[in-house]
Length: 210
Image (cartoon, rainbow, N blue to C red):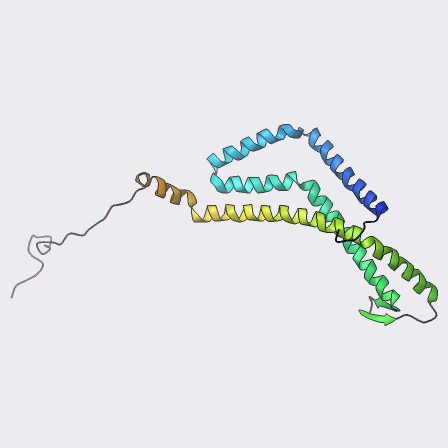
């Protein structure tokens, strides 16, 4: 990617780990029914539209997508943790390469003693190795991160759509637009003017003439 060559050994290791997770997911899915689950799932989504409307269907679709892509989100989380640790170690070794070290007790960066040459040499070698392995880790991090981000974006959009449908009463608006006769309306109440003054209980007029 981008002109960088992946490390063959690390690429093979990460690829085998990913295939192991995918095979485990396939075994777990086959144990609970496999592809036979898709037909009932589609039926449940269709029935939910009749029972709870579009908002319930969108919410169930978002939850179903989260369940069906659980293995991809697990891989993304694992590679994200690996990338975070790799970056942290690279930062520490970069400080060591410059003759510095992070002091967590005082939360500052101190200088290494000039006599500690073996540690400086070992840190330089490890920094070089990890720096050459970083493009491979970054490639898997970006690829799986983009996949998990796309899944999260779709789920977020479905959740927002479900909330909007439930809040805006879209079904009533559509029904009013398509079949306005099915909704009550068009009744106008006009108060009538009284032609005679009101009377009291004994039948006499409440207003007296002078």
